Length: 55
Image 1 (cartoon, rainbow, N blue to C red):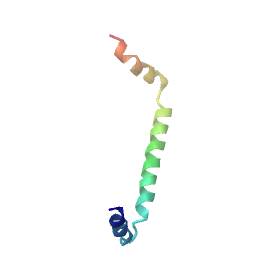
Image 2: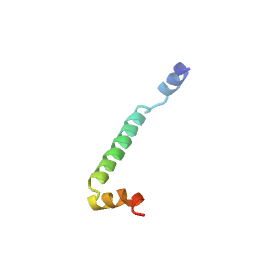
Image 3: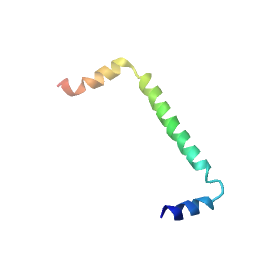
Image 4: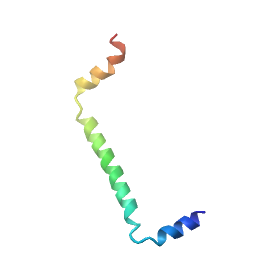
């Protein structure tokens, strides 16, 4: 079955760009997520972590 899919993908011009685009989207998302978490205020994180036990 993989042979049929591979043959169909080989006949499409420019199909090699899609894995590169996917990797760039994946990498950009996780780098952005890391930056967002790293720059988040420590006070806000502490407040959010204590939220369930404040009652």
